[in-house]
Image: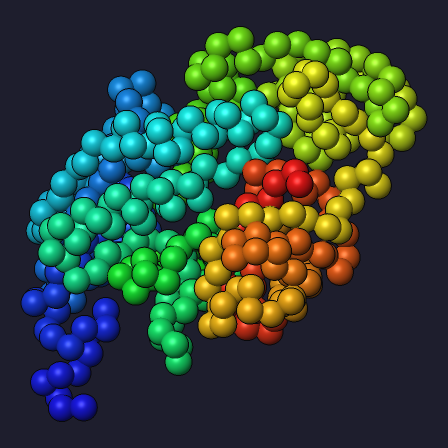
Length: 378
């Protein structure tokens, strides 16, 4: 390849100064370092921060992203590094595409993962479209995940640091989106490296704590958010065992999750009991022994497939799957039942598998992600 056509660090055959990249900036350390890194390399950087909800009440709240403080922090980083920064009002889009479904899913007894829907329906859809409107060559984010070029095009791979890997939250990234996205932090060995870079660039967010909460759920209090969105949703009901015997009362199904043991208020019944099912229609919380939580067969739908061959081109796939973000991938057989649906059989049963969670597919003995789908009740 002639020297003047050598690819730059983002994969384009032109100088960084002629390569425009939109950086999705949350105001946190990770996306700030990405923006600073690319600006230092000479790229034409444009920072964009999304205002996702009414941040007036959240201005002083810590532990969540995309609030007023974070917008301010992102702007300060842009000023420090000398590139333009824009704030886009996505409140209506975010409410319709993420928050409303979150509330409905919780009321239906599921355990939703709104961060995945936000990536899928807002950041990697509307924001990505905005980046193209700005004539950017690509869009970069601070996610810890790797994009590698394979024989058939870009592939999604786990981050080099397993403790920071965010592949569970990005399984719904489509091949088309992957061709446009870049993840400059995915190869770093640790978060300490990211903070060291932030300090080297002199960024005002170098020591900022990581976000912990879902951005619109202060202090992790899901029930309070649901009650505000759906007045009357927290109707009381019965706690029953697997045979339907009443063991106690509860203040509302939305206060419980599958696999929960603590806070049931039904102690002194012998062996520990866990929430094994939520029935919003009858306002019942069903509890049982730990063994009742074990699941081997999982119905999955809305599958986004990132494998090389068509998903339903063979009767089954031998892969590994992750059914919760905090759990390691486990061996499974995935049997397609249609282009975007499947039955997943775990070789060893898992506890606490819940409708509304994601089931993400991983290649055995490889860092590659083959996509995934959403667990439902069947």
